Amino acid sequence: MRRRLDPEERRKEILRAAARAFAALPYDEVHVEAVAAAAGASRALVNHYFGDKRGLYLAVAQEMVERMPGVVRRDVAGGPEEMVAANTAAWLDIVESSPQAFLNFVSGGPVADRRLDEFHDDLRDRIARRMLANHLGTDEIPAPALTVMRAELSLIEQAVRDWVVGRGGDRRQTEALIRASILATVRQVIPAVLDVASGERSPS
Image 1 (cartoon, rainbow, N blue to C red):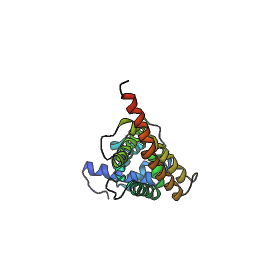
Image 2 (image 1 turned 90 degrees about the vertical axis):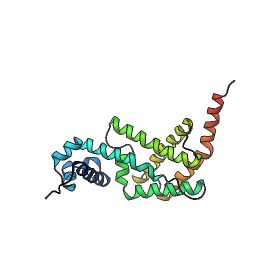
Image 3 (image 1 turned 90 degrees about the horizontal axis):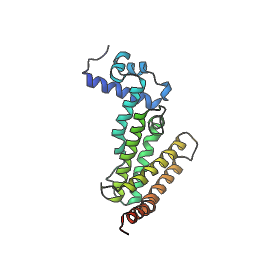
Image 4 (image 1 turned 135 degrees about the horizontal axis):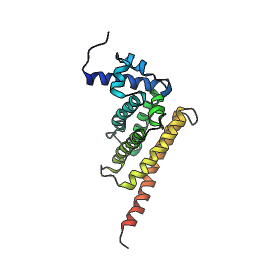
């Protein structure tokens, strides 16, 4: 017997069930009927709130965009090495606990959709800003620095994907790659790019 819930709570329960399904299975193996059953709802109700499986998937992706940047902590004690090590370990812990969710939502995704591209772009932007705020000590992020860190995140995503699908190194090697790459980016690449940008703005 289905529980009586108000519409917003019912929608959230369907969304939670969908998030669990997409975290456990490839996109093609997730069925709306199974999500509805797990949420104690009907297929018709799922369609009412989300339209179809693609709409359900995009709703879960949007929720992840709101939640995932918080993985990058801004209260880690110590210097840059400790901060990068702690945040890298936390990120890889999440991926290791649910590799299918990473493949479904972060690493390209199985659905070609303009909205999904926008979600990925927004997620990369939010994470890059938090990372740069840690290293620059300010929320006022120069545009060139943001461009560099977004590119760095693309590199990280590829390294993690290779690890997840067994094409790259193990976790320890992947973690070392990410830590070294981020530190090189904030210590060498970003200062060099900002120097160039500053020179271009200087009067001749």
